[in-house]
Length: 515
Ligand code: ME8
Image (tube, rainbow, N blue to C red; front, side):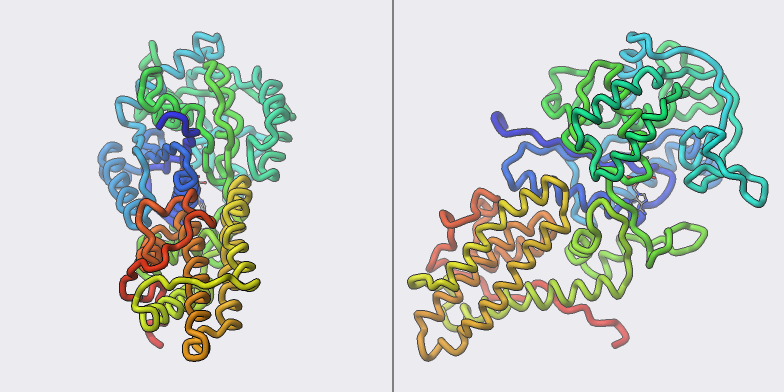
């Protein structure tokens, strides 16, 4: 492990009050692709996931369903585990906020903030949205026709008046602004950064960080009548993942995290509260808060009441795990909102996967099976056309790294598929099936070059479609230890004479069930 740069990536820990939906699936798929990319690129990677199991919302939902909050948390944790395995998005660990190691971490964070003089006891009187687990100022609210006050997110708020500990958030506005200025990509994409900067520029008020009217939470150190505000508790999970507060913990080397991957509705918590808590506790700040957009069902927000919530497991079942992963990452420019529709996903499966990549692999590999004795053919001297397409494949790693610098997963896939399109043109122009009789040596070279381009494409596409690309690399005879990015390029070309397995299709066309 020593010597390799660390890369610690977290996803938001979902509220344990409901089953996984497509937004959760999307976030985990993106996190998984980014972390697989870094692993293949030689980093020492830690990927965390978890469950946000405390708070008033949990207590209320459990009561409605006739469960204990812990019973509800256990049920939901099981559903999220099943989703992670169905989507092939493993994590190194799962931090459940009801876990004792997490309570110890959150309490230590609190104790350090208190020792700094940043926590004081007072009374909170104001508006709270249980659904958002967030406080709102009067000025942010709108009045609904039925008389209810609504938060900017559209959720109802209730008046709360109770004894509460406060965090001196107001004292951190200047330091936060200074941090955003010194580290301009702390919040990315830029549009979200700008929102945060303008919000903090208007000044911050102190934050209520404990509750006394329910007890489903982590007790405040020294005053157990209070439980911690669920966001103090939840954000601390990122430290729990590294074994905090034990400085000798095996994973302590992973703090500060490189990436907190989150959705756009929770930017304030991650880009304002969290760095302020860490500054108060004298802990290093994460490098980046990477914000993704929301997925909509044909332009509509998914909600239980509208009845258009999509179960990600059902989608994986219908279309295939990798097909779904590819669709999300290719179709939605990372950072922007995106849409899901049956037509759009079928189009991607049939055009990009079955036609562009699947056909090229199938045609070239079956020609090798039939005409080259099932062995990687020996190439002759490379023509200009051969060299041009190989150079394009060799250039992909630098392009992919540069796209990943800005988390442009869609851009990376776009770059790879441009080379796939180019390879299809090369294959069609070079006509190896005609050379079979007239110039078998040239046929061998064309098939070799095509297989070598496919090798580069498959290695680089592993983060997006790990299962299918493993199968393609098997078909290309690439051994498991030669599948990371260090194996790309001219020094590790396919070995002529390697025996290949019988070719098999990797991406079937999607056929409508009633067609
Ligand atoms: O916010 N499209 O949990 P959560 C894309 N417990 N992403 C979406 C989405 C959609 N339609 N809906 C939600 C919480 N998300 C807190 C997090 S972290 C310390 C605590 C994203 O279950 C959302 O933005 O409501 C968030 O990043 C994640 O799913 C979990 O949302």
